[in-house]
Length: 579
Image (cartoon, rainbow, N blue to C red; front, side, top):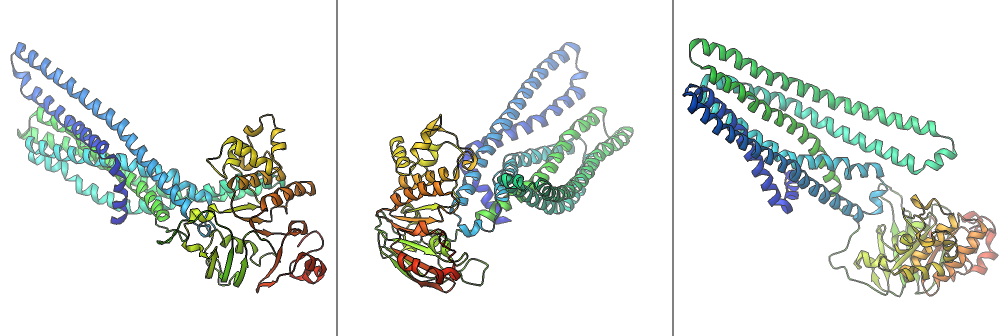
């Protein structure tokens, strides 16, 4: 907890001036609220007994002073509400920047085991509660301490026995708060986890809404949602039960303070140990005493909610990226593309069996290599090792003789272009999606890349051309159109190494023909790996690698592959149109 609190406090550093200004006005406002009842006591104790003219003059002066104090207090409150909240907003933005930046650093292995909705909740609702704590927490603590201590000192000055009766309730409240705090912390953490779960379920269902509707499974999704919703309600119910006990008990105790002051005050009045003016002062200060107690109550609730959110925030921030630059990483540019696999083995996290075993392979710069084999033998995995989406378990991969683990990750991936079967296009227009391959490219360069990818013609058929909005994930485009945009992105990137991961397997014949032409144009003079399930995709391959669970078993030429097609059928080939 100490470690987490230290990291939490570091977010104040860029805003020290704003923080101390906020604290100054919080303290000033608290002091003003303590002074006002003293002026009332002075009037009731002293001024009312003066001569009429003098009393009137004094009351007018004190009235002006009180109005001035009220304006000062109002100014303090305005500063705290506006600038205090802005400080919290700045810190929330900083935290969101940090966690989003950290998400970008984490590898595929991390995302393989995570739900997007749960990750999203840590960037939204969790951060809001954290920054509410960072803003209101210090204010509430300072204001409460000043008011409680100030009220205690003043009431001791007015009447010691009655002051002791009043503050006898403080330790009782503290014990009561501590009891419920521990339970609320667990309840709030559970509630956050359930919020993350239901966010994940909603995100998953909405992302796959076309699949849901195509199978007419709306009721199935509602059933799944209802189950998650029930768990969420159950978690909230528990947290609210503790909150109810917390607020009810402390509310009753603060009311008991007023009752105790009235009962004790009447007794002291009858014995002559207390004046009516002093009893009135006590009653006025009851508000100054109970208000900070309530603030502390709210702070403890806020702390539990905010701190549990920060714990979840830190859980992510403390996950070290398992793939990152080595200390001696070198910058690389304009690689030729010679790739060597030296005794490479790989297995996924939490899996005992290796997907790849002792792969030895050398691909020369500019070679066109096709990977064929049954599903699950590791074709995609092998290609995913080249840009270090995963790191090898054993062995070494070299590009142009350099171990890829000694290359700067950004530079390495900048030298590799990937065209996948499942194309991901971002919400926005066509121009923005092609330019994603090279954010600094000009409009002319984007158009040139689109022409080389055979995409310019269909783009210009839209009324808005390159400014056409394609919808979420490019839902307004056909499969072939999306694929050609993804190829245009890679043209714009212009890398020396290419990976085609079943890029045409989901397309119809006409779309495949257009995309295949684009791929062949793109592959010229580049080191190219093709993962293929169709013979048309590997027709131009200089080498064909038959991958099995034992590794690279054979390297037939295209002609040899066609002659022995029947032999290969049992090893992952499926007739004339697929391999």
